[in-house]
Length: 392
Image (cartoon, rainbow, N blue to C red; front, side, top):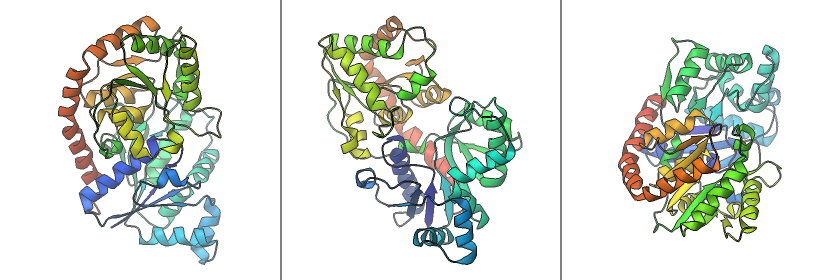
């Protein structure tokens, strides 16, 4: 069995490799250890990013017209011809991108030609796979909110023209997508595939991991700033005698917007008050090493989704500062919905007060989370049987 995966970029973002690791676990569970994954992305991955994945990641950034011509003529760049051969021999193609058709992330004026052109630019392999008659799956993802015409029409186009089956990772995502594409369309439901990412358990440390986010800064709507709230949190953690370690989730050094810069800003503000902390050197870590670090924390405070997934799926209690309904539904899977503060309802007093209660109850919460882990894993596997059932 051979699966071609697309939609993710393995380097500089913990979410992507965590989904890829989970996909490998899912595929081997469903199809056995001989099942093959070939992952394609538009950039050249760093050796560090793919060193622990266990399957090949290839690069193809050619536009759709060039790929289509190579497919029709049998002539083209070696990389394009290799991609075409991989697609020909694939049993299935899966788009793994994690959040789509979301007004919070993309707002544009709608025109059909522009929308199609953008999709062909960003997902040329997807269009080629459909032209070749391949079955294409939209792996579990968040959808919406999509009040804008652009995102609604994009969802309708994708459901009709690009995907044979679609899976949402939240009830709210399923509702939003179904509302956009029609109530008769089937949308499956599954927890995020990254819940299956393996890790190596190690002794818990008296340490709080803080997964700060540049994305939440863009969504933040509370009167008191995000940085200020996180500094107050750091002071409270220090007062309880726990260590502070910052966990960047998205960390491309070539981009001004990245989590490492936000973590450094909070770290500097804490240092000015003689409060020590560390920032994980994630650029020099594999994704497996990063999940192991998260799993070793006594607790995590997170504003990044896949840090939350990594923590919960390894039994680590999480307090979330979130901006999307995906956080609420993830916490509900592990019976942890009490530990969420929205980006529009946070201040230092509320955050610190909640954290103190959260810290006191961390062992009780851990026991609850650990009881839910096998149930969540089974939900992912059961949904995978439906989603990939045609090849299993």
